Length: 195
Ligand SMILES: Nc1nc2c(ncn2[C@@H]2O[C@H](COP(=O)(O)OP(=O)(O)O)[C@@H](O)[C@H]2O)c(=O)[nH]1
Ligand SMILES: [Mg+2]
View (cartoon, rainbow, N blue to C red):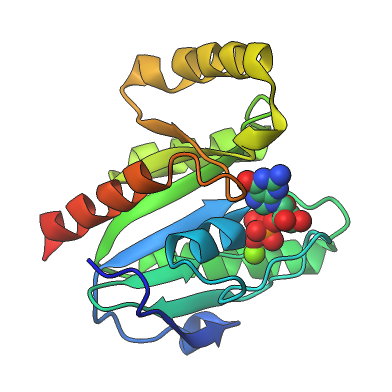
């Protein structure tokens, strides 16, 4: 698949604004600031197709990107403490509304920060994905920020949490490109699986 023919399609702020399902969907899920937009940009080899930000909690919409054979879907990040209660509720309504629709989801990429133990919100999302039966893989982001011994320690941690229950996880760095090829391959396989 050519990942470079990618364009922004639309931003949905409410369930009503979600576009009709058309193509297999690759969903980017994770905490605010974990690196969803950076992963998306790296996959399509563009600097700023999806907007990245050093300030968390900026994206409150579900953003759709159109590729040749699939859509990339950048979910708004969760777990940002400074967001108001009403904003959290809006997030939940929007994201639950998306998953409640019968959409051709080929793969959910669930991002967690490689430097830390998954948060309670991460584990809640992973439990939801497991229970839903949706195909998903865990991406451990910002791997460039760890030295060799930290990498080894975190790999063991993720192996214990995810590997032991049969979940695939990929260390990834949007700066170094670590893991990029494997994730692209996983995406291609998942699209072939449903189309
Ligand atoms: N060192 C490093 N920084 C990253 C990486 N991925 C994202 N970042 C930084 O983390 C911040 C949040 O990234 P962004 O992609 O906007 O996160 P999002 O909120 O999940 O979409 C930005 O300052 C990025 O430059 C990575 O792999 N390595
Ligand atoms: Mg983002």
